[in-house]
Image (tube, rainbow, N blue to C red; front, side, top):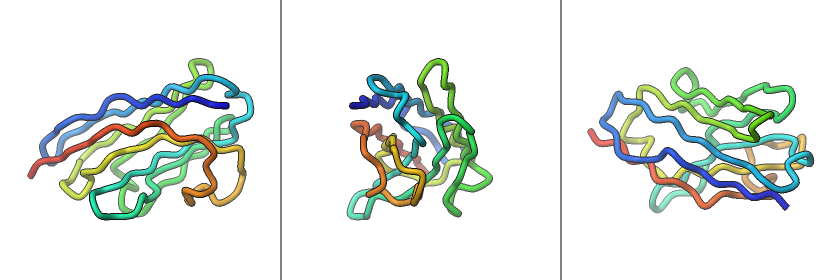
Length: 124
């Protein structure tokens, strides 16, 4: 089992920045990749970013490419999401997730473990 705890959400004005962190504990040696997803009210949970745990190759959705950056610290078992140039459309609950899978990292069903989520609100 893997436990995930997110932190760093909050309220920010459009154009501002936030940094989310996700601390992993438990059987972290089994993790292949970590992902960030978000879910706005009335919408499906959508892929934001993912990074392979050991090789560190990031992947981003089109909507955040160039604005968000995902990084990991394997020694500390943490993954971070630096969010810059935030827009009101970025408002959502952000979830950290971990997967054993090497495939379909943009698909929420590929992930085995989820954090509780952290709210990000961007005001216009």
